[in-house]
Amino acid sequence: MYHGHISREDTDRLLDDKDGSYLVRKSDRAPEAFTLAIRFDGQTKNFKLYHDGQHYVGEKRFDTIHDLVADGLITFYLESRASDYIESLSISNYAESPYLAYSTKKKRLARSTTRRSSTGTNNQVTTSNCSVENNSSDEQLSPDSDFATNVQEYEKSHCFKVQNFIGLHWCDYCANFMWGLIAQGVKCQDCGFEAHKKCSERVPNDCMPDMKYVKRLFGADLTTVVKAQNTPIPIVVEKCIKEIEHRGVDFEGMYRVAGFHDDIEAVRMEFDRDGENTDISESRLEDVNTLTSVLKLYFRLLPIPLISFESYPKLLEAVQKPGLKEKEKLQMIKEALHLLQPAHYQTLKYLMAHLDRVIEQQSKNMMSPENLAIVFAPTLMRSPDATASLMAVKLEQTVTELILSNQKELLR
Image: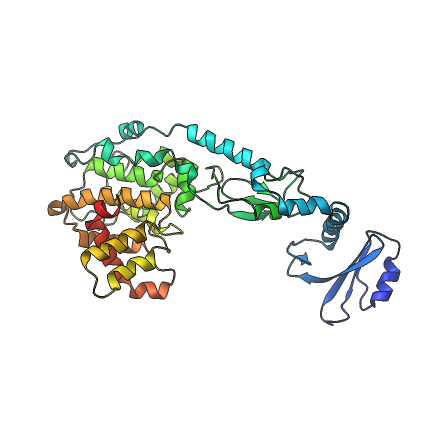
C-alpha cells in the first residue's frame, strides 16, 4: 500500500487497469505530506492524506485507509452514475418533501395529547399551616392557558451531529437512501430526525424534541424541555413553585437561605431521572430551602439564560441611559423582554408572578424586591462576556428589581 516517494507517472502505471486499487505515496509538492491515489473509471485520483489518530482527506474520519477508500469508491460511483439524483437533493423543495407531511402529522399528534392535569399534581403535594391567603389557587399557579396548546409551534432549530448509521437508513427529509460506510448523514440529538447533510441544511427550525433523546432537565435548553414535555412551563419550575407556595411564602430569608448541598443534588438527579414523577412533598423534603435552592439551580444551569443574551444589552441600556424617566425605562425593558423566545417569556412571567406573591409577604419573610433582585439577578441573566458581567452586577440587580416591582405591567 505504501510506496514511498514515487512520481505520478509511476503511480498511474502501478494502478493502471485496476479500478478500485489504491496506494499511498510521499507528496511531490510537500515533502512531509502524503498522497492517497485511488483508481476509478480508468483515472487516478490523488488526494492529500491527513492523520490525527484517524485517516481523512475531507470531513469524514476513518480508522483504516481501506475503509476510507471503500467509502470514497461509493461516493465516486454515485457522483458519476447518479449526479442528477444528488443535485436534486440540494434543490428539493421543502413544501414538496416527505418531511412536511411527517412533521405536520407529528405536530398534530402533539397538539392532541392532553396535557397532564394540574389537579393531579396538586393532590400529590402537602399543604402546611403557613400557606398564603388567596395566593395558592390553581388559577394563580397555572400557566397561561392560551399558550398551553401552542408549545409545539415554538421555533427551535435542530441539533444536528454527524452520525454513523448501522444498517440501511433512509433520509427523513427526502426519503432517499443514505449511502456510505460511515458518517452517512446527520441526526438531530433532540428529536431523532435523520437526513443527508445536504438535506439537513434545508430543514426549517421546527424541531419537535422527544424526552427519550433529552437525557436530563437540568442544563438542557429551555425551549427543548418545554417542547419535549409539551408544557408551557418546565416541570421543574412548575412543581417547585407549586410546592413552595403550598407550604407558604412567609418564612424569613426565603430564597436567600440555601438548602443542604447533598439534598439539592439528590433532588436534581431525581428530576433528571424521573421528571414529573419526582417526589418533592414535605414528607420527603422537610426543608423548603432545598426547594428554593433547586429552583435557583435550574435557572442557573440553563445554557441560554432565562433572560437571554439577545435581551440582555437592551435591558442594561434601559437603566444606563442618562436622562430617562421611569416610564421610558419601563418601556425599554418591556420591549427588551418581548424579544425573549416564547418558552423563556412564559417561564419568566410565571416565576415573576410567584415572586410577586413572595413580595406581598415581605413584612414576614424580609424579602423585598431589592433583596430578591440581589438573589435572582445572577441566576436569571448573564453577559456573554464573563469579564463584562463582573462589572455589570449592580446594573443587573437594578433591572431585576424593576421587573420584580413592575411585573404586572411589563409581562402582561
